[in-house]
Image (cartoon, rainbow, N blue to C red):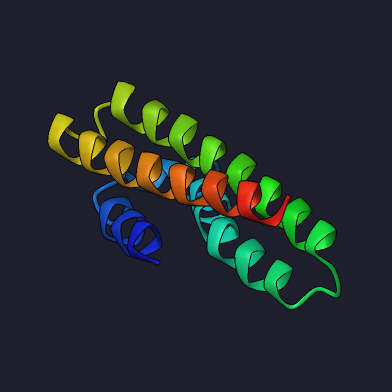
Length: 103
């Protein structure tokens, strides 16, 4: 949820021209991470939960790619970029460890 909060704060600085493409896509990808973890945790089996964790990892990768687009367009500065990257790496590692534990 910390990543979601961070992205919501960052998009406030994006130009209005990105309200149609980049902002909604970035929000969908970012929100998808905790939503897939939550949804998977209520599934009937470890296998189903694991599948949702892989989807969360994919959404996390999409979030990183979209924030890189925002950085290249100068909507995000280096410090903000690094904060997202560090937090994303931590989440990725936690997801990977949980997947291993469930396997």
